[in-house]
Amino acid sequence: MNDRFLRACRRETVDTTPVWYMRQAGRYQPEYREIRKKYSLIDIVKIPELCVEVTTLPVQQLNVDAAILFSDIMVPLDPIGMPFEIRSGIGPVVDHPIQALADVERLHDLDPNDLSFMTETIKILSRELPVPLIGFSGAPFTLASYMIEGKPSRDYLKTKAMMYSDPKTWFALMNRLEKTIIDYLEIQVNAGAKALQIFDSWAGALSPDDYREYVLPTVQRIFQGISHLDVPKIYFGVGTGELLFDLKQTGADVLGVDWRVPLKEASPRIGNEIAIQGNLDPALLLAPWDVLKQKAMEIIDAGREHSGHVFNLGHGVFPTASVDTLKRLTEFIHEYGQRV
Ligand code: CP3
Image (cartoon, rainbow, N blue to C red; front, side):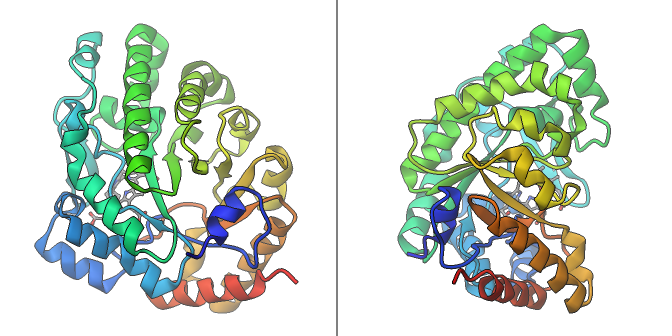
C-alpha cells in the first residue's frame, strides 16, 4: 500500500510530496460522463460496483496517492429525514427547507442499515485499492446552508438570518448535525476508510467572530467525537485565510486551504503541529504548462517547509479540466517533490 499520503497527514517523513485532487472523480473524465448518461449521481453512489469503479478510476488514470469515496455531502441527509435531489446545472435541492425548530425536531438519528450501500462500497474499495481511501462528510455550517436555503446560495442570507435571530433553532440544528456527522464518519472508518475529510466549503462566508460563536464549538465537538478513530482527520474550507487561527482549535490533524492565501503565509498561521493540504487554484489547470508548473513548484517548495504537506487543489476539479493535464501535474509533483 502506498502510504505517503497518510505519512504526510501524520507529519512523518515521505519520499515525495503526496497528492490527490478534490473532485478527482467527475465530469472532466470521459468515462464518468459516459456512466452519467445512464445513471444519476445518486444511482452511482448507491450501486457498489459502479461506485467502486468511479472512485477507482482517477487512481488508475492519474496515479494519485489517495482515493476519495465517490459520494456527496448530501447523502446522510435523506436517512435522517431530509430528502433532497441533485439537480443538474443547479446542485443540491431539498424538498422542505428548515424554517423553524419543529423542522429540526422532525429529523432523527442515522440508521446504519440505510447506509449499507456505503459500507459495502468501502469494504470492497479498502480491499482493492492500492492507496488509502478517504471517507468524508459535510461540516455543520455547509450542510446547514443547504438545509436552510434549500439550494446552493451565494450569500447565505437565510442561514445567517437564522443564526442571528433564532439561535435556538440554529443550535438545535447544529446539535442534530453533530450527532449525524460523528455517526456517519464512524460508519465509514469501521468499514475501512483510512482517513476522513470534513468539507466546510462555505465556512469562509463567516466572519471570525461569527465562526467562533455559531460554528466552531460544534466542529470541535465533532473532532472530539471522532478522536478515538485512529485515522488522520482533515478539515477543509474555501476562503478561510482569515479563519486559520481559529481553525487550529478545531482538533483537525490537517487543514485544507484554498489558493486565496499563499501556502507560505498559511503555513505559519497554522503552525507546525498541524499538517497542511492544498492549494493550487483549479483555474491553473487551464493555463499553459509552464505557468502551471511554476505555481506547482512554489506550492511544493512552501509545503516542504511545513511539517506535513499534501498537495491538492484549493477547490474541486471542474468539468472543463483535462485528464492529461492532471496526469502530467501528478507526475511532476512526484518528481519535483522528491526528498533527497
Ligand atoms: O471525487 C470526489 O471528490 C468525490 C465526490 C464528491 C462529490 N461531491 C460528487 C459530486 C465530493 C467529495 C463532493 C462533496 C461536495 N458536494 C461538497 C464539498 C466539496 C466542495 O466542492 O466544496 C459540496 C459543497 C457538495 C454539494 C454539491 N454537489 C454541489 C454544490 C454540486 C453541484 C456542483 C456541480 O459541479 O455541478 C453537487 C453535485 C456533484 N457532487 C457532482 C459531483 C461529481 C456534479 C457532477 C454530476 O452531477 O455528476
